[in-house]
Amino acid sequence: DQQVKQNSPSLSVQEGRISILNCDYTNSMFDYFLWYKKYPAEGPTFLISISSIKDKNEDGRFTVFLNKSAKHLSLHIVPSQPGDSAVYFCAAAYDYKLSFGAGTTVTVRA
Amino acid sequence: NAGVMQNPRHLVRRRGQEARLRCSPMKGHSHVYWYRQLPEEGLKFMVYLQKENIIDESGMPKERFSAEFPKEGPSILRIQQVVRGDSAAYFCASYDRGGETQYFGPGTRLLVL
Image 1 (cartoon, each protein chain N blue to C red):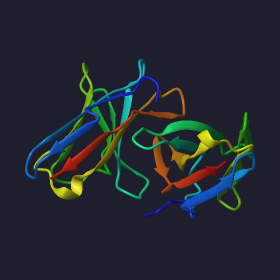
Image 2: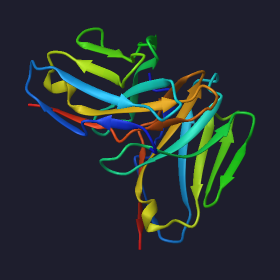
Image 3: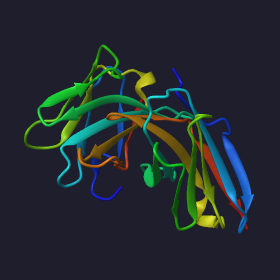
Image 4: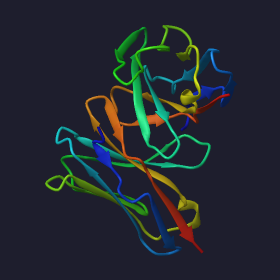
């Protein structure tokens, strides 16, 4: 069962512009949400997270928004840089278990 | 990724052989997860372990797969009698019960010929 969905498998954005990645979930028990970034042949690297009691968390160029009523979260990267080109995974947590989306491949064009 | 070690990074096995994947968690972390990533897919939960204890193995195939996390030494994911469908990237993550975030190792890429 796919409890976490990233419906856009890829995203291409020009350097300096905003990247917006979207994620939807179905399980209302999820209480913590994370974004991971992954380069080829490496493990996922934690990027940013948000608790279900918040609707926004910001860390430098990265901002995560959570809309609990819509069961939707998004990651904004601004400005996008060439080093941001990677696969981004959305993950949702309940108790100790993480459920991952299939990932969105972001390509930042010069 | 800092601190979570996995070895080997690449492993090639022939059908029917055994594969052993090792994971050393971050210092101070006593919880380990194993995930599998098939091509073009996200990470799928396999098993969650504490030292000397399997907490949740609901994502593990019923046969051929086993995992342990002994009191001393790394966590081991063992796949017996490998088949071509076992070819995947296997990631380990460690977790501190006082925190919320899992930190991943670099993964082991298993190729079954």
